[in-house]
Amino acid sequence: MSKSNVRGYGKRSKKPQTAGRLFVELPQTPIRTVEAALEDETVSDDDNLVATLTQRLSSVQINDEYQEPTDLLSPHRRRTRQSVLLDPPETEAIKPLTPIKSQLIPPELDISEESISSVSSFSDNLEGLQVLSWAEVCPPGDNIVKIAEASYAEVYRVTNERGTSIIKAIRMRSPIKAQTKTQQKSGLVDEEPHADSDLQGELQISEWVADIPGFVVYKERYIVQGKACRELLTTHQDFHKKLKRQDPDRLQFYPSPSRYLDDTRFLVVELGDAGDALEDFELTTADQLWDIFFHVAIALARAEARICFEVRLIIAFSL
Image (cartoon, rainbow, N blue to C red; front, side, top):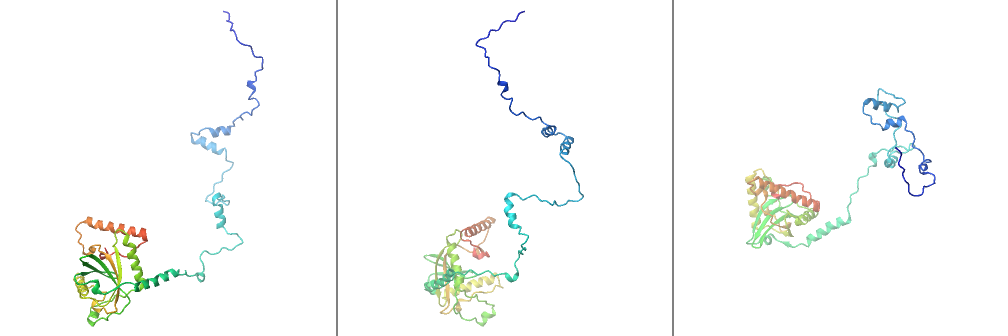
């Protein structure tokens, strides 16, 4: 059977076929060595892994104990500056970190002129305050009740037709009548009068916390001078009779109003009425206790965040 002739179309090209020579002069891929082939293969068993590792080892030395290498690796580039600062030059003696006791210098007290002037200006402000008598603080028709004795002041509640206020009476440095023999035998301990600097701190705290929820509202301050009125003496005696029934061994730390003289002076801070003291409030459920705890914690947290307020002691009659 004869082959059929395939007819071609077009003019046959006479140019030499050089397409296969395009890549002749390019560098050829090097022949892969046995070592490279071993690196690329996946070692499946322990024998092949050991064989691969041992081909790169020339000698192995095993010591009985671990020895620190003599040539440490250079530190990381980012810590080079730190190492230079920490390593002193060899020619310079290393100075001890702890200074000699004779070289210790006590810190200087930072007493600025501003703080000194603030105390003096506060004393001037006290002289400019309104001066009232006890009869004017509690006139006829008003009701005054002593509710607590704080570390700085005696606390009273004054009620009249206009509303209710809490007053804190802080005794200033002024004369007072001496104790009688009966008062001395009863173990009466007089609370020392307070300096102007102490009063300044008490007033600043009262003003700063007045706008914080959970603290009492600050109203006014003034000076009360002179002898006590009958209503003040009566509520003072009733307060201590009540305390004696609750705690017979309790001492009286504030002088009786009967010892006030014409020149006896008090700084009175008038505050809003925040209700009954916790020691006079009867708790009936555990929920009330938790409510009091959380409200006090939240109020203190707000004061600490806003004015860096810290309290040393929390007692029942301060809540």
